[in-house]
Image (cartoon, rainbow, N blue to C red; front, side):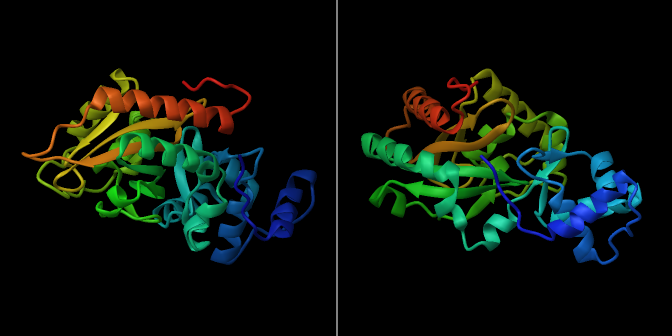
Length: 278
């Protein structure tokens, strides 16, 4: 699976020519600098280090670090194990190009089927910095009663899908994502970073199963599992339903098993080289 950034490739190749002894001036304008940094990522280089990007641009390390920090805050880039990866801003600017996204194409039919079998609303989300970004929502009338939308986003720490994905990351990367105060959406939302780390450890012990017990929307509970190959999750799947005094509690164990089976099937389509997900 690849995400291609269409940019000023010729300029990037010219900068790279420095390694071959060609005298090339480093990029001067901020647009040129950002473009050369984005051009460092491709199918063979999904992540890049600060050192690698410094060598690629020919700029001082401190300058590259400041630009990278801004690009992360603006969601052009995101922190990743070993460095940086492309963020979701290009995806979002492309008028919700999720219709053409490989993850959605593979997972959406499976999510629709799962929602029909359970009578619940389903979500497919990816992690974008400190937020869960919704690639898909399924479930017909059940989904219509839930205040989320395709292309919408919620704080990752308050959602089951977000916690399922955060739990696949190293603690230091979680802290990098959540440097600012954790927003409180309901009285049940996790508000302290230490409490969140304890919750993520519980998710890891439970095999990746995460639960949102009215933490993002009052009266709504969700169960989620990560969709992952080798390494951090690329997405997460969830089933959501209304809870309350007159409604039965969600059968978390049953829903988790069904979600895990769906994630396994999706993984066989997305990761054909290793049919079994971790």
